[in-house]
Length: 81
Length: 136
Image 1 (cartoon, rainbow over the protein chains, first blue to last red):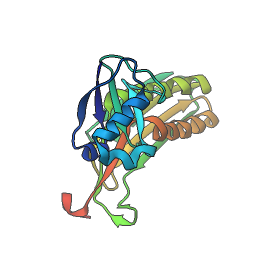
Image 2 (image 1 turned 30 degrees about the vertical axis):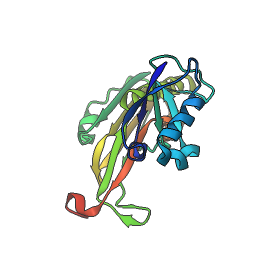
Image 3 (image 1 turned 120 degrees about the vertical axis):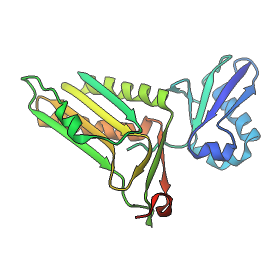
């Protein structure tokens, strides 16, 4: 299945792109996707512990099972205000 | 509870926001908070901050916060404006107004709303160096 990954804030610069499409095995988890993303974009690896993830517009746990066509966002801690 | 959320690249027009305030006969407290951009970041001078958001998610997360506000406190209205894009030092980046029957719930709700925003709403900022917009 294919999912689209979006990067925000300085994760965009570290990844070198605002988004990417990744092929994953069926029912791959968010945790699996994160490992793939860190492999493909190794400059993000030092940020792993601070990384937040959302599927669509909702935060999801790393155990979340992804579906075909999901839009997944990875970003650093938020800083509004 | 009436709610109004504005994410905008335009300057925050405080007099216009205040002029647009509507109160019922039950309102006894209006708490207003204005967050302004500081002139330094980690000790270094800056000319402002450039705000970026994941806007669809930011709107959704703000609405989740407003839902919680409504459950936790008897509020009449909440209005929140957050700037996006470049905001110069001393300009407001955040404007919040909470209207309630009494000051206790209005202060508590306003404080909680801002704390929650800083925890879950996907907005980020990066400092603008002094020379970038004429200096300060």
